[in-house]
Amino acid sequence: MLELGTAAFQDSGTFAVAAHTHAGYEPATNFLRGSATLNNGSVSPASIYSATVTVTGAALGDPCVANHTGFTPSIMWTFNAQVTAADTVTVRYYHNSGESAVLSGTLKIIVFK
Image 1 (tube, rainbow, N blue to C red):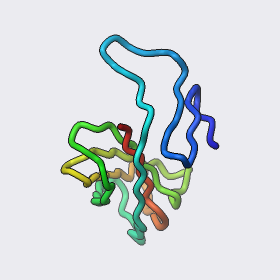
Image 2 (image 1 turned 60 degrees about the vertical axis):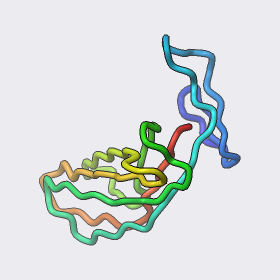
Image 3 (image 1 turned 135 degrees about the horizontal axis):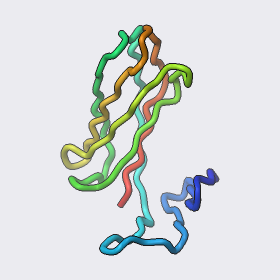
């Protein structure tokens, strides 16, 4: 289990959030996961890339997040995930550094239901 703020994630496909809600929003209690191997090799500075990953059950409007297992923390990366079609998440990632970097590993996605 990974503790993240007041949320506890487990491999069971559900997670619990502390009883803090905003008007008009219900806390998410289920999530879907997807992953893909992403090996860009050498990535140019100030570049934007994208990848499409199948996440079965994802629907337009579902919030989602993405991260990558192989990024170097000292190199600045920004990952933006969006459900772009049924069962499809598009991840745009930005290399914000002034130097080339290698991105090799697994792109991981969580879609909240």
